[in-house]
Image (cartoon, rainbow over all chains, first blue to last red; front, top):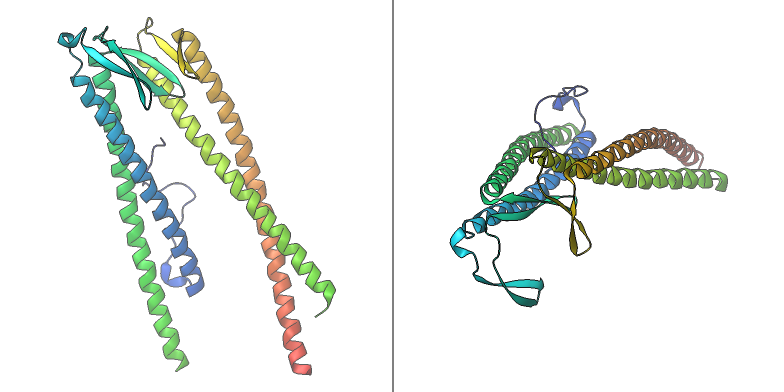
Length: 157
Length: 126
């Protein structure tokens, strides 16, 4: 996941919205609408990721040394299970992405999921913040476009 | 309006649309590569956190195969290098396509302008 920043970057320039014509304003608004859509989608997938990490973290709480040897059902496919026994309650294997998995002990695994949840939550906050900023700009554009349209009508009549 | 002019306009419009499509595809590829690079970066961070005797597995189809940590790191780095190179290639492609698109847009605007002027003239003569 990319780091997202709301700070001004090189190459950005300030434009006075009132200096644009209606056509330009509507193009800009369309662009912003598209961007806002993307942000909404990112938020949804981030929320899903957050849920998965939290869920995995909570599941770890249930793996204690006392549960060693406990009967479990191992899913072979989505609809088929075989009975098994919990053999190792000290380590779990975690998917860290790009098809790599690592073995971690319970404490390290908890730490991993906490870190991930924190990371995703931070990204969500950033996206939310930028989203709010962008929709403010969008509102401003709509307002100015309406103003310009009213002016035009007045001139015509 | 002469057929010749119509054809020219149509040609220009077609090539503009073609470039637009190519550009969209390139941008999509770029986003995909960017995502992959990020994922690999997170993986390498995670691998770096492991102790040197940490157990690493690689999933090949439905099975997990044990891998040496060092080997895994080398592999991920190699992939990141490859993706970075690809990113650069796609970036260059996008830049050149954008230039092409702008050129087409400009000549389209010119043609449109000519067309309008011709229409005005025709209306005056009628």
